[in-house]
Length: 217
Image 1 (spheres, rainbow, N blue to C red):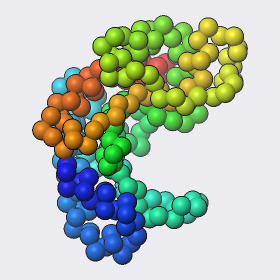
Image 2: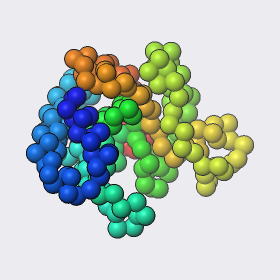
Image 3: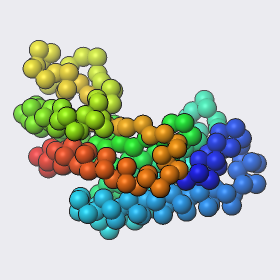
């Protein structure tokens, strides 16, 4: 992964089409490594979470090309690589396992990020009656070693349909139910990366199982 991070570092400093086209081979090689890593993780995660078995890596890896049509930031490329491993691939909005490669800002995560309103409403409805079960997962000592707290993206007020004095209103305010863990570049480029990532993903499995149960309601 050292060459992949090296490509991203150079891209950050030269985020333009001319440089990218001149270094297209470096990009293609980096993307192939990303697809290979995703394939390895799909197979390994499938050992403890059968829902991801049979996934195509291409359905999990995010594009590097930015949509700049409605953005003031006209840089054409993302300066990171990401892959979301979940049933149906990255576009399905199902709970899953994410890894993010970016020089100085690498991390892994699990759960569901910014689901559309109908999905979020379903999760909140389930959480309304199963909050203690979710909190038991999130507060488990072993889990908290990897994920001290949930990604803090919340409404300021109570979501529609829930009283502001609800016992678990702070939990119901969340717009995402995802946990992340930063990783040093030195770990990402080491032989221990796969082992470290899989150990963390196993910890997040109960969160994903809970969310799948919520979506099945």
